[in-house]
Length: 175
Length: 175
DNA sequence: CCAACCATGTAAGCTGTTACATGATTGA
DNA sequence: TCAATCATGTAACAGCTTACATGGTTGG
Image 1 (cartoon, helix red, strand yellow):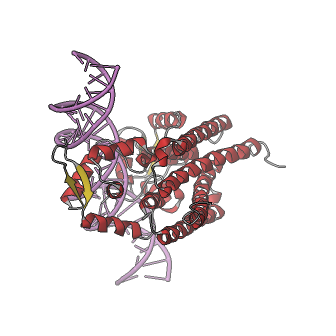
Image 2: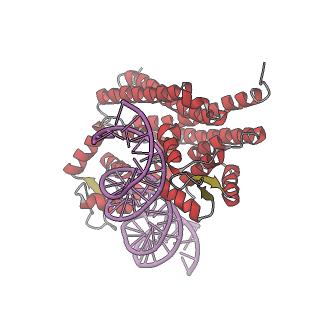
Image 3: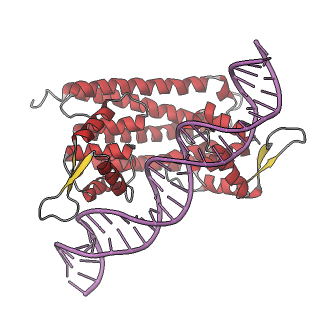
């Protein structure tokens, strides 16, 4: 179960698709930045099939293997992944996109944890920059670390903005 | 020649070190985020040695393989990498840390290119968000893309700040 | 003397990348 | 008919992760 596998499960949950259609999603949307695409996707799908996470159902007349559907096991695995504590922020971002559409509680909870994780990591880099080790580093190396810190701050800031959007939008359907 | 190899060359250029010392750098500084550390570093060093990029010189009494030094070939390879056009921003950041300390021209040039690359990619995501495809995506997926856009903006903003610092500092030794 | 650290490695396994191969169908 | 696109794969290779193995040295 790699990030790619989870991404595939997430996409299939949004709607059954063929392997080719899944590949196209990776080629034509920014999700391609998270997990790669061309020759890795079919092996991953086959491995998911072997694991009993997905099933290919073919309409009687159609070509190819048909459309992949989630099995109960696949759904459980996906939802387990979605509910896991936040570790790597990159992977967390991928998860965010697949969080249940109809559960604003979970979304807010996620955003809170994500913000906290980003702030913690940013503070870690800040501590490093203020510490002894950093004094022996070149200005450029320090700036490189500062870049990392800014990225983390941007992540935290994003989480706050996203939370705002989520607190307002779900109810403000028509004004 | 992976990013890890280049990182090793860059560190060795800053000062000859033993394999163990190099490993420690990855374990104790944020460079560990760029390229991994534990059991991958010795193979990488050996491969660099086979390629004739580094040489281990041992003081007569010392333990271990001694300190790695760059060869002419290693230095040429490193500088070639440093001078390459910016592709992946993550790798570019790693390069930035190893740019020649005494060449503010090159640093400013790098920062300009980096900023441009970040802005271009940010604009690409913005275009995607404004385009047709994004309309069929969930709000969360759109927010995930927005997160990527903010990260890129933060990178561009960092480049501007770093440039400022570089335009002032090199000459302002003593106010 | 024992733990911690110096110092260097090997081997298995998993993934992803790259590049190639195959064949059907569809639109110009 | 010819190119593009649908649709699915395979095989070779490179790289990283994890975990284990091995010894010497130093400090409490």
